[in-house]
Length: 322
Image (tube, rainbow, N blue to C red; front, top):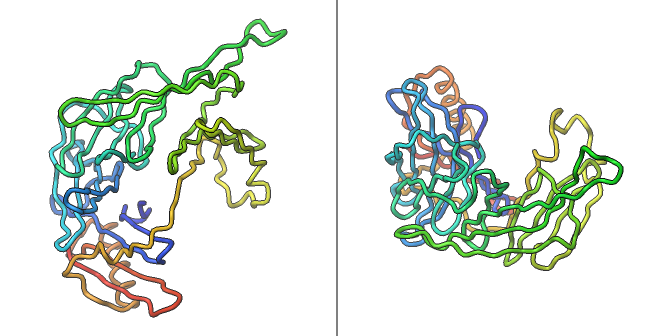
């Protein structure tokens, strides 16, 4: 996730109580760019974690792709961006699956793909009609496009309006993309369940299950596509102070994520050059860097920070150069 001050990239492991902050690289003598989106994935062939950021250069008004490879050396590299004129349409993080990261583009039939092993960006065409209502998500380590098919129903006593229900969900599952694209297909018929069609439909998967979820003013609803069962949670925000909610937030602003406990320590992502520090010195370095970012005067070689907040043992602090 991004830190709002200086667009720093922060990682949290809530299970191990650890925090890792990565400092973006200096380009052209300064930080004259904005981070448009990011993705984090694992290259299972080289056993490496990678952070990918898509940045927008303010001077040239062009995109760049920067990749941070975690490991013994941990370093930034720039990846050539394919020429197409397409733009990313969302600042949300990438969708993962099949050894790659995926982003939506301004063409509804094209997605931007980053191969985590080959460090290569490419555009691929997805098998959907241009005006199809679709959602992108990950399921069982594969990239999935869900196409929502609606059914029109006349409303009694109203001649000018039509109600819509969700009739079918067509799943397109990407199994291969390097040589030829291979898509598996699955269609789930929901016509007998009379689910009112919603613009807020979202998908999340866990284990071998896929949940369709959405919200209305009074409740949140969860439908298991394979078990064909519906769960309704009544107004989960009713006990929350209005001051803690975004003023203009609607149902479309809330996303469900499948989170599992991860006992892997973020210390494993530190480069061998990381040096131990103390809390006061680390806080001073963080504050100094944020001031330099604001003033566009990068005179630091700091590449990242690590903090732990262990309850049963002494906390640890590290920093490393870029």
